[in-house]
Length: 127
Image (cartoon, rainbow, N blue to C red; front, top):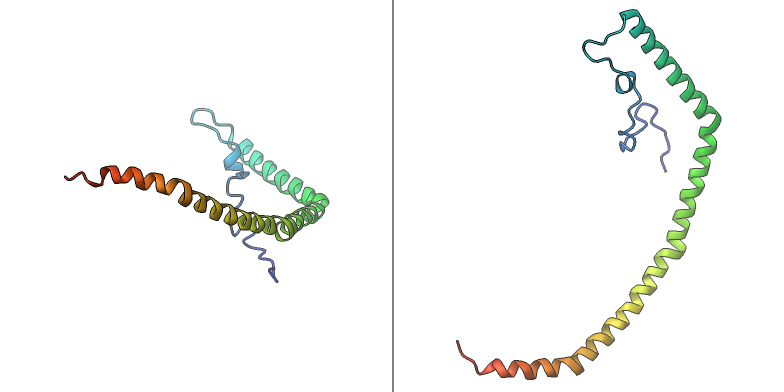
């Protein structure tokens, strides 16, 4: 577990690169359809202010509880993998090894003699 939280780079693994919420990512005026400069500047200011304010309030009210829930979910997933899924896979692997050995034995006893006999038909052919 990390001892310190990096407050500068909060997405070091780039999990949320697909989320584009900057003003330029959401609103854009094409050539020939420009608003008055003061409207565009005010729109930028309002958008940025409300985006920051709403996001900060949402994370303040819900973020800690949601983080706690996700912590519990991932702890549960880790628990199931460590105590159930991995041992079940190991058991399956052990059982399949026995089945594989039985199948190889059966093939070598029943099929291999037939294949060798059929192969002997072509043994005397020369190139």
